Image (cartoon, rainbow, N blue to C red; front, side):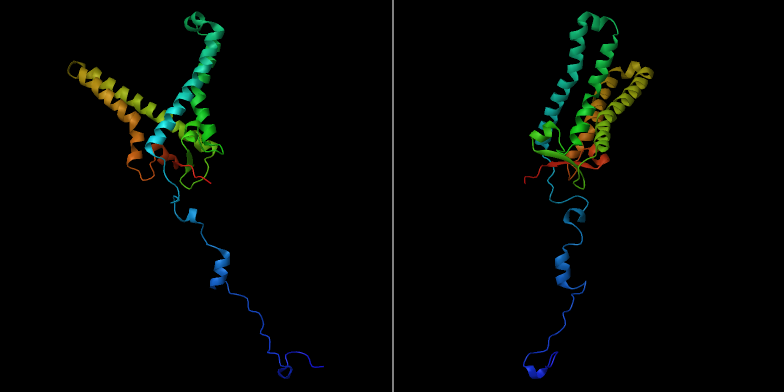
Length: 223
C-alpha cells in the first residue's frame, strides 16, 4: 500500500505548519501592548486630580479629628492630676501626655496615608486618595516624610522669619516698629499658606509638599 502524499490518491499534499515570526502582527496582538498604559507617561492620564473644595473639606475634617485626638491625652492627664496639680507643678505624667498629643498628627497621617485605603478619614469621606505620581500606594516612610515636611517646613520658615524681623526691629525699632508688625503678619501668611497656593497653578493640583514628595491627591476611581 503506498504511503505519503501520493498525487494518485486524489488528496492534495499537506503543507507543513509555519510558526508565526516574533515580528508578525498576529504575534504582537497575542502578546498585548509592550508598555502598560499607566507606565507610558509619568502621570497616568486616567487620574483626575482632587477638586479644591473637596480637598479643603477633607482637610477640615482631618484637622478636627487630629485636634480631638491630640486633646485626649491632655484631658486624661487633667482628669488624673486635677487642674491645680497639672498646671502648677511639672508632673511626669503631664509631660508624657503632652508628648503623646504632639505625635498624634504624625501617627494619624502616616498610618492612614500609607494604608491600603490610601486616604485619611476626611479624604475617604470626600472620595479622595493620596498616591504617588505613578498611581501607586505610598509607603509608610514616604507618608511620614510628607507629613514631616507639611508640618515642620512652615514652622521652620515662621521661626526664621521671626528671627529676621526681630533683628530688624531691634536695630530700627524707632522708625520701623509698626511696619515690622505688618511685615511679620504678611510674612506669616506667605510662609504658612504659600506652599498650598501651588494647587491653583499646578496641572495636577499639587501642593509644594506634594511636588517635593512626588505625591498627588486624586479622585477615587469607582469600580
